[in-house]
Image 1 (cartoon, helix red, strand yellow):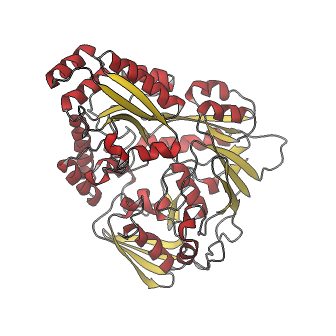
Image 2 (cartoon, rainbow, N blue to C red):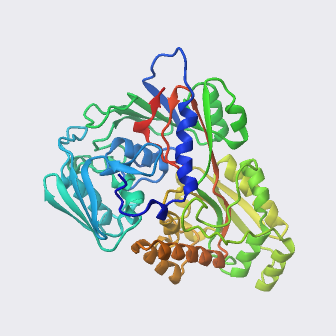
Image 3 (cartoon, one colour):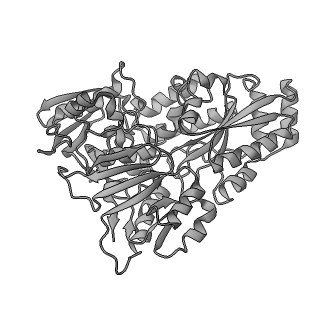
Length: 516
């Protein structure tokens, strides 16, 4: 059953759907012979976890934990964007603004927090729109009016306006996680590091920077997961992650592109490569002189050699991006231009802007990939008479760098956006209200904001897609973005392990990982 009430093709084009079916067979065919059934595995994650409260999660890795520790009303089927009921016995969109649900009985929250009721669903979703709480992921439920409890196990989700992205972006995702109201109130701030859910797993151990351990939840009402224990090990550096896999310290890992060919030949290994749905770009703070001059931004955009960046930072194994939304997603701007590097054009634009050589700073995450991006940019800008310092920051420091008040002083920066399945996931970062939070460009455009609202509230697929294309055109006109790549994702796993990934590769379905 595809219960969204909207056509799947309105959300995702065929190539991404093909990616979902391409993942499982490659791993499914790899069989480990003569080995005992595995009861646990270790997976590498590319950054440390910070907050596993579904409303305040930051990274996909945290979302993966949330979907393992909590149930949602509906969930994606393994490796697919088709959904099925999870905590819900029934769930149906009865009209554009109303979703009705009934819960399965006797679904217990771990930790002794009782049995799930419709009141828990109401609490879990309404806290996203509580102005006193202001959670990080509040935008996922921005069209929510209220949740009505109509019985112990029944309720209605009432929307202020139609919300075509709600099913794939929210209900089936981590923002749709059902948190025990009793557990939340008991844990208080500890909800960031402990779970109060009814999912397949519970949190057993969390040693920041070292390991995060999930244990199978004995009270889980659904099918028993294949593994009694899952360990997530944060390893930021790709080379270190490759070394850990070769040493047998991890069983599942994202592999550096440069070493994928070699790793894929290792014994007892199954490897998969998929086109990414992420977006990486160089951004500019449009409120900071001289970057507040559009001609200066245009000069930098045409003065940067993107092809050289892709060679240096991604081993030349990724496709170049030309706009925000990747080609697998409906709403991409197919006619977006590619800017070839031209030093003479860049110098001309700087002269027209009345700006000579100046000093600037490029802020990046302290990883090998982004450091390589920075070095190419630094060399490119030097040819234009621009002295560019590189500021590389680790983890939390980088996350905070673009937020107020520090974000006001940013110059240039490199960002990556982890993609999902509706174009609104990409554009929501750049509305005016996100300045000081995720809109590090500090770019504000009234037409963009209106189009964002329109796209979020119309079920007409043509009007939605036209709005997203126009939004990308406005971003291009701002010259505040230099698009790099949508990435290529490469993974390796032990041949006895069959991972379950959604088509973007970042969203893992940990309860559906299997031993083969």
